[in-house]
Amino acid sequence: MKAFLPSGARPQVALVLGSGLGSYAEQLHQSRSIDYAELGFPRSHVPGHAGRLFYGRAGGVGGVEVLAMQGRIHAYEGHDLQTVVLPVRALCRAGCGIVFLTNAAGGIGEGLAAGDLVLIRDHLNLVGGSPLRGDNDATLGPRFPDMSTVYDLRLRTLAEQVAKRLNVRLPSGVYACGLGPQYETPAEVRMLRTLGADLVGMSTVPEAIAANHMGARVLGISCVTNLAAGISAQALSHDEVTETAGRVRQVFIRLLDGILGEIGRELDASPATR
Ligand code: HPA
Image 1: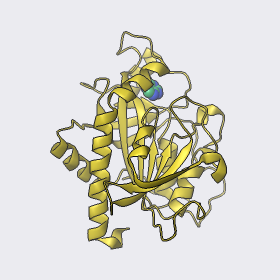
Image 2: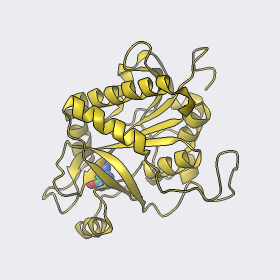
Image 3: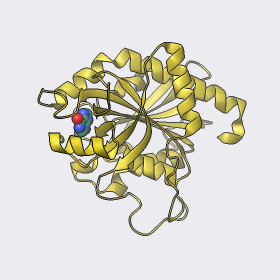
Image 4: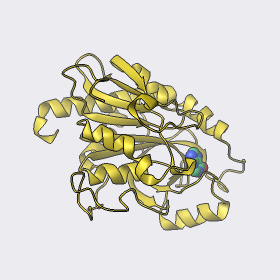
């Protein structure tokens, strides 16, 4: 990682770009990129997950330094959860104190529509495991990490303020993460709604657990690429997921740029919170 970063670089935000949302990395200023394979990161074979790590500044010259992952790997690809979170742990180790997770998700919550962006306020871990299983590495974090505020309150407020300023609707919701790769049945979606889920997907939660374990501040935004099974009359497909993600690309980029710009200003104003 050190050899990849320009000398003097101090990346502060790790950004994970989910299904079909990777193009934001190309907006970074003074950017450079490297293939995951060269960093020893596992590579995703899912279309829409390019497998490159970008370094650059967000929100213009002098903006916050970001390490952006164009795509991620998932447990359903056969990786154990420790492997799934390896890149996020590496980015935290490289100095990122903020982990910004994005994903494509099915919409369950009342009033959600395909194309909506939703701020994750909490999650349900239904993956059937934890990336923290096994011996605890105390250099990463505590054996029993608190999970009462995984999604940083200050960062959520900041994201909501930016969305308001940009006139982008940004409701908040609870994200449920299943193992996949099959989409849910309508009965499972009814169960998830009863459990309090607004969104359903197959990623993000293991990364949020690992980042929270390391003491990073986590921010999460889902792009509702489809209504969940049974809510939509239509059969679900990955093509629909990447198509919708592509359709909201411009709004998503504007929102991310606005939020990262604001995070940069806030970090500059109070470097102690870095
Ligand atoms: N379910 C699970 N994961 C998803 C969905 C969904 O409906 N849409 C995008 N990722």
